[in-house]
Amino acid sequence: MITNLVSWEAVRMMLPELLVVLAITLGIIFDFTMSGLVRAVAIRSVSLAAVIGATLITLGYMLPIQGFIDFIGMSNSPLPLQVGLMDGAFVVWPLSLIGKLIILIAVGLIILVGRERAEFYYLLLSATLGAMFLVSTFDLVTLFVGLELLSITSYIMVALKRQSGSATEAALKYIVMGGISSALILYGMSFIYGMSGSLNILQIPAGIQMAGADAVQPLLYLSFLLIIAGIGFKIASAPFHVWAPDVYQGSNTPTTAFLAVVSKAAGFLLLFPLLFNIYYQQEGVPSDTFHLILKVIAGLAMLIGNIMAIRQSDVKRLLAYSGIANTGYLLLPLTFRITDVHLVEFFYYLIAYVIMNLGVFAVIMHLQLNNKQQDESNASAALSTFAGLYHRAPATAIATVVLILSLAGLPLTGGFMGKWFILFGVFQEHSYTLAAILLGTTVLSFYYYFGIIRQMFMRSGSDTDLISKRFTMQLGTWSCVAATIVLGIFPSPVFEWILKIINPQ
Image (tube, rainbow, N blue to C red; front, side, top):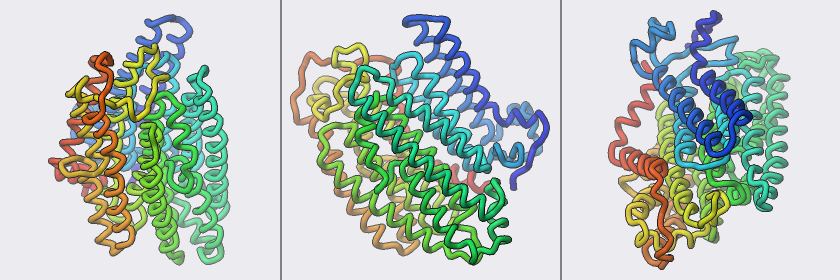
């Protein structure tokens, strides 16, 4: 049950977003008033501080920290907080809290590990702000505004490499395809509003029932198809994935990491309120058709992503197709009836996916610094970049092995436990075809993931290519490795913590 707040004290519920807005403002001011290395360092430092602060505040909303709860004036409210502002235009509820925490941690790691021009950081924070609003609203208009803020700033980030022809081509493809996907989502939302007469997601089901579910059933299916097609682009799910390999390859590596992790996570979190509050809850409208469509998309994503990844010689393109396959895995818990267990399966694997992908992208940035170019964003991302890594930097190679094994889904890693939970849930629903596809494609993925390990241990590289010892890169990489191992060895505490956040009773 969400408590609706109307007083100015409710603004305290938006502290993470306000902190990010402050950092964006300061970043723009610093960009105009400073120059050179000092400008980049100042903007990066402010951005990282804001993200860390927003992360801690979000944790405060979720944990019983009495001093913080007293400060925000919610001493009598159960934790995690479930409150709303302006009739659902902004809400704080369990799924939004988990989503914001994942987004903020991912962005913090990208800022920590990456090294980019000054304007990149406040563009990154602007996209982050859009993602945070997107997961914190039950209002269709606010949801679309958050989505467009995330999308438009992402287009600009992709195009930041102005001297690169591949970046220009990637940005053009991304803008065109992104515009089409946004139009599809908006068109689908217009049908929802037309059927229900409401923009509030919690009130839409009642509006549809008043209009007569049987009468509007064809429009309900049409709106679902339009929205799924649009969101399918945002999360790079087959068959809406064609933009991803070129955009991942053409973008600078921190932007690629953002698209692969934060943008994808935000797209999935956009699905939750629409699926669970509108399409899966309609009396008189069987949800089996909605489930079937998502099952087909999940199966295609797993098959196409893994099969196409085998042919790749560029690691960014390989990770693009790996991301498409992982989109299929993440979709599986959403293709069944609503249960707390399926939600925990989804969030557990999403956390594992975010951590292991960010770790691999951190390693790529390590390697790209060795190309003797001023900007690692322009360096090669070919698989051969990993050649002889074990002989040049044994510790980095071992860290990479752990992350790759997690992506492949081998035991004692977060990726394995995440896939195991999803597989268990699929078997519980007696969906044996999807279970077979999940198992088969996981085995298939060993070929291209182990190809990276083969490069590190069985191929020779230049002995003169020393690996960067930047502390922030090492910290980011090993933090991801440690988190991956913890998720793989101690899954129960994390599983139970997510379950407690989703269902505090």
